[in-house]
Image 1 (cartoon, one colour):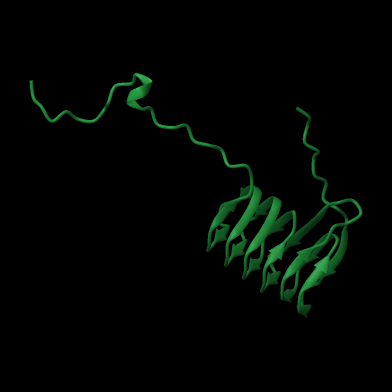
Image 2 (cartoon, rainbow, N blue to C red):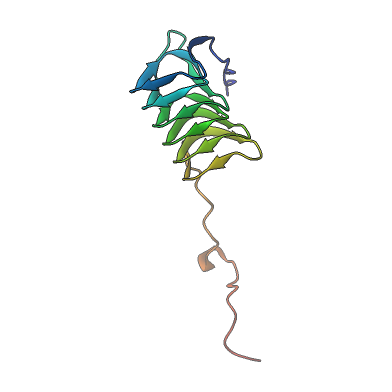
Length: 145
C-alpha cells in the first residue's frame, strides 16, 4: 500500500472581496477565496497542479451549487456542495442543500439542511448469521417446557 499524497492548499489565485457580488456561474482553477456574494454556481476546473480548493469565509454567500475537490466553509451555501475529496465545515457554515463528500470534518455549530452523501467505496456490511451457519435461532420459542 502506498501512502496517500497529503493535500496542500493551492495558492489563492482568485479572491472575491467582501462587498463584491457576482451574478452568473464562476469557473476557477487553483485556489479561490470568497468573502463576497456569488449568485450562481461555483465550479472548479483542473489547475496545472491538478488541485483546486475553495474557502468561503463567514461573510461569504453562494446562491448556487459548489463543486470543488476541496472546500472549507464558514459562510452560507444555498445549494448542493460537491467536495469530491474533502469538506471542512467551520462553526459558521450553513448549507441549505445536500453535501456530497469524500472525507468530512464538521465543527460544532455547523449546519447542513439537506442530505449527507459519502462519495466512496461502499463497504459491505456482514450478513446476519443464518441457521445454515450452525448458529442458534434467537427467536423466542412459542412452546413452554
